[in-house]
Each structure stands twice: as structure tokens, then as C-alpha cells.
Image 1 (tube, rainbow, N blue to C red):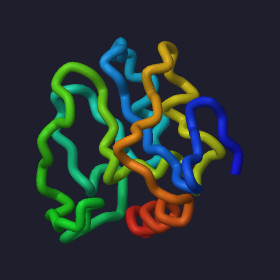
Image 2: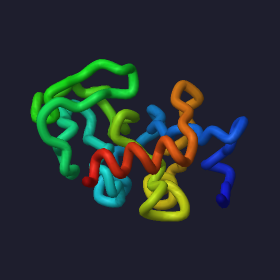
Image 3: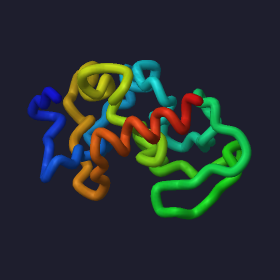
Image 4: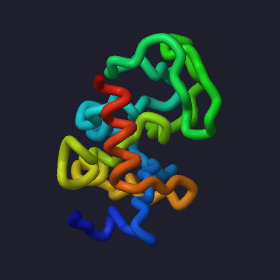
Length: 129
């Protein structure tokens, strides 16, 4: 597995990506996400958006939610990444595409979320059955 300065392995765990408040709201990241895990500030999101998820979906915290139920925005002012949908582009690309296209480098590692490559591939398979 390759890593660059934006994709750091820690004890064989990959750090998730978050968008910082330095975001200039250019929107370059949103269409690049293969999981539709990036949303504009203030926008509601759904697990079914851009995925094949239907019915009940198990979130990272173990709780279940209706895939079509609108979820509250994670940010009101800037674009944000839904960590429950983000796979770091594992299984799609060699590096997170949001970080690759961000003109201000505000797509950075999120130390609050760590998943192994196998966990990310499993998440990808679960969302794109």
C-alpha cells in the first residue's frame, strides 16, 4: 500500500479524511468521491446517496439507520465528509481523491476515525453490492 503525506498509516490503520474549516467551498472534492461521502455545508445526506444501500444500514458506531432517511449536516459552513461512507477511495483509487484535487489542502487526516484496508474494502463492498 502506498502512502503520501495526506494518507498516514498508524499501526496498520488508515486515518480517515476530514475537511477543515480552511475549505474555500470550491466543490472540487465532491464529484471525485466514489462513495458520495462529501456534501456541501448545510446539505442533508443519506446513506443511499450514490450507493446501492437500501433498507436499514449499520453505522460505524453500531447503530442502525434507514438508508433513505435524511441525516443532519455535519457542517453548516463548509463541505464535509461522512466518515460512515468514506472508504479513503480504497478499492477505487490509489489515494483519496478529495485530497488529491483540493486546491487548499484542507482534506486532511482525521485522527478520530481509523480503519484498516480490509475494513475499508468491506465498507466499500457493503455500499456497492
